[in-house]
Amino acid sequence: MKYFLLTLFLLNIACSSNDDSSTTATGINPPSWIQGVYLKELSGQVYPNGYEFKTNDLCTIVAATSCYKALLDIYDGAPNFKTDVYEEIDSNRYYIEITIGPNSYNFEFIKISNTSIKQILQTGDEAFFTLQ
Image (cartoon, rainbow, N blue to C red):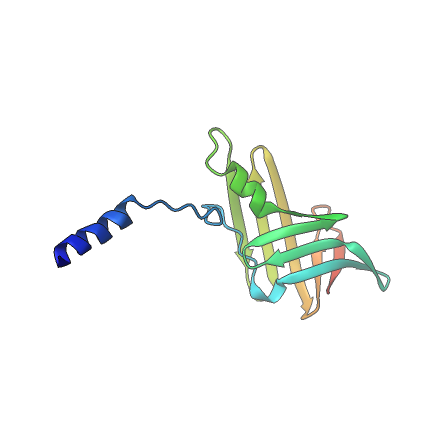
């Protein structure tokens, strides 16, 4: 009986599939210091656009929230369609490059304090965001 149960157990493991769509080869991993919702701040005024950093996702907020993990999950494994995530993480800087097909999205964020970050734009300009 022991051998029968052991065989069933091993067969179940060998034949089971991983249907967890949150597991992709192209993971997004924002550091804990940046996780939360940040909205744009300019001259002391907070605007309803910015970013949401989750434990496993990066979302943009512009009238509505759009998350990159969902896009990566849709296209991950599609033939002739590249999906990739490159990250650089340290105690006060988060850089991420997300590739979805022919498009590449680059973001660089610097920690200013526990409640504010700045984004270094590709033009070299800066944008400031406050934790909500």
